[in-house]
Image 1 (cartoon, rainbow, N blue to C red):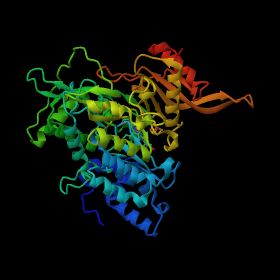
Image 2: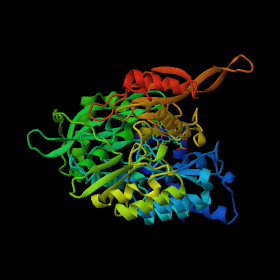
Image 3: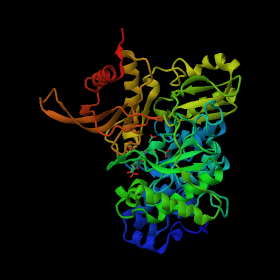
Amino acid sequence: MVNTKPTGTSFLPEETLERCEKGNPTEKVKLAVDPVNAWVDIYEYARKIREGEMTWKDMEKADIDTRVKYVGMLHRNKRTPGQFLMRLKVPNGIVNSDQMRFYADSVEKYGAVNGVVDITTRANIQLRGVKLEDAGDIIDGLHARNQTSFQSALDSVRNMVGSPLAGIDDHELVDTRVLCNAVNDLISMDPETETRGNPQWANLPRKFNIAISGSRDDFAHTHINDIGLQPCVHAETGEMGFNVVLGGFMSIKRVAESVDSGMWIKADRESVVTFCEAILRIFRDESERKDRQKARLMWLVEKYGVEDFKKAVIAEVKSYDRGVEIFDEQPRPTEKFERRELLGVHPQKQVGKVRVGIMVPAGRLSATECRQMADLAEKYSDSEIRLTVEQNAILPNVAEDDVYELLKEPTLNGDSRFRVNPGFIEGNVVSCTGAEFCSLAMIETKSNAEAMGKKLETLVTIDRPIRIHWTGCPNSCGQVQAADIGIMGGPARKMNEETGKMMAVPGCKIFVGGRIGEDAHLSLEPYKTGIPIDDESLLPELVEILKAEFGAVDKK
Ligand code: SRM
Ligand code: SF4
């Protein structure tokens, strides 16, 4: 098979190409062999490995570490050499039971430890343990189910986050489903061939995050995305649209809350797609190619200045001549609004239907649990499952009359890890991948997060949900700065009882006071540092914070 598509690099203007040539090592790899070739080459690797012509070890470093990321495959070299995670694209976090069963079938053969499925902090799916020889079949299976893993990692636009309550919410301002799908297609669907993989957006300077919020709850976390669309009515015309915030991101070097762009766009497909396309074009061609730590959109917006960036976007949109207009930012609603909960049973706008939010501890699903979730969806929610950025699941459109039976299901009770009404602490735990699979991690996260959440439930009583996020390193995939309490892997020391000397142990920094929703705020400075992650140090520390900052009381 030969890749007949234009390459990602071929879309870059001369001046950008020159900067890529002088750019960082990733840019040089992307220039040497265009990574979009991986969309085709992956089948060739799979065939050759299956037929014994090569093993994964024969792959070039640039291929295994960089290029195959364009098919969403990340080699877990330190933890599981020869095995990959495969990151999908799940626009608006909506999956169905057939897809869930396919995930289970795909990973099961890799065993109970390595062959698992994770719900990510972008309401997305990662399949774990995948071997190269199986990759082509899995990709074909995904494409047959209208999903893809292409353009989900490295310098790509990441999963489109929308509202998990799209279409079922009586407080909805915009149904984000069609918009998330449209932007997802812009990014990853080749307009010529209508097959997955769009080279036009395949050589970006860095990752790029887009979130479209559907209500005042901002379930999509617009303030930590490169483009965040916040629904808001136009004050004069009464039309529904979005105020645009730009540049939110988290990284080792800098964590930044997005800034108001001064722009408002209509909430229709053409406006949203055109607007995202314009910003992506400017970002792709103009953003930093040398220092990867300065290549996210915020740095470019700051280089322009917000006003000039707005002018550049307006000019770009105008140049497409599609009749799309950009308006000045509109006044945000001021009436009191309370952010709603996603876990538990809640009414929908459809009379007689409810949504049922289910805790999936730390977002981790075994193959069996994927099938259990699929069974529940087939029985109660017309086969549909919504994923959330809190790494949980929602069954939409459950008939009110069936709720009693649903809540009695063995998979939501007893030894099962799923719960519909978990405690306020354990139900709101979020965790990045951590040391189990991620080589950048300084600590183990998911198992600690799940266990610590359970222990805290036995120690304190609290009257509202408390979001405890875990992240294994300062990249903050677990978004600790947005959490009520954020635990980030970091250095710590502890006395060695045997030697009487201080020794390095797995530790953390603790962040307190991040907020989400309309009143979003990132907590940038750590509240405490150097805390060992164990029951003698971290657990009492968390109990103290819960009592001092969140009104928890000791459990009687
Ligand atoms: Fe992330 C890199 C996992 C959401 C910021 N992230 C990584 C890598 C690929 C590192 C690696 O090569 O091992 C991690 C793969 C570990 C693994 O085995 O799973 C990884 N990131 C994740 C996921 C799976 C965490 C999770 O358990 O949910 C999330 C996948 C989302 C998705 O479906 O696409 C994930 N990462 C995030 C988020 C949160 C978000 O998007 O809201 C952030 C902060 C927001 C942001 O990007 O601005 C995030 N990840 C990073 C960064 C820092 C980016 C930067 O600009 O410097 C890195 C490092 C990098 O890109 O160089 C990173
Ligand atoms: Fe890995 Fe660090 Fe991201 Fe956790 S935060 S998944 S440890 S890169």
